[in-house]
Image (cartoon, rainbow, N blue to C red):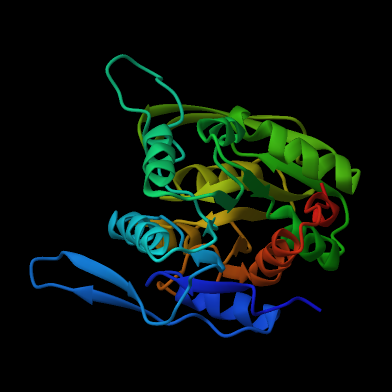
Length: 312
């Protein structure tokens, strides 16, 4: 049984729903923290109980707006100044991860900047899930525990018991992730080759592989405006697919995404609850990763390996 006196779990504003589920799984209370907001938009963090000598776990996804990242940075700084034994940032969705390299001249590398901000603030460990690019782990000089949403998505797919299943990637960049699912399930892999007119706008798309009379599941790490994934679904139905579903780790779903999903050929789209989803769309389903993160926290506290929980 885990010693709940040796560690404490706190949450930022945006991810409190997930932190509460994590604490329920761990059998410990959610720590008391106050976020004081000023009229000009500035805010301050204060812990309402002693954290001296404790292993502190701070749960906060850093999705837009940037207040979520700033909250996490202030939580880390306050914990450091309050003499926490260790500060562990639990970031189910690591924002700015799409800016992982210079893809053209004179651009920022946002993922590296965020990594530097967290390190300078004083974090000792990062626990995150399905980074947009695996190499972001190397942006840190501290331990990074990188979890995979496949731990909850694969059991769900298996429960559907779909015949003539095909796994698809919405673009070439996501082929490695989709191929991992296809290998585990022992089914074929199909790729979509797309070109973009500009950010968030798909110009053309072609299917590489056979989807005729198949039940297709598109695998991705996140869905933002849903332009790519809905276009892929529509093209696959036109190519003779029996059904098309999508599974993605992070439910960004900004702008017109919910309407696009609702009006598309997708039967359903499955996410984890790494990001809260307020706009209700009947086709959207969320699976909780609270138990997975709770198990990881438990293993970190007890100095046990976390690789045992990986399905793929």
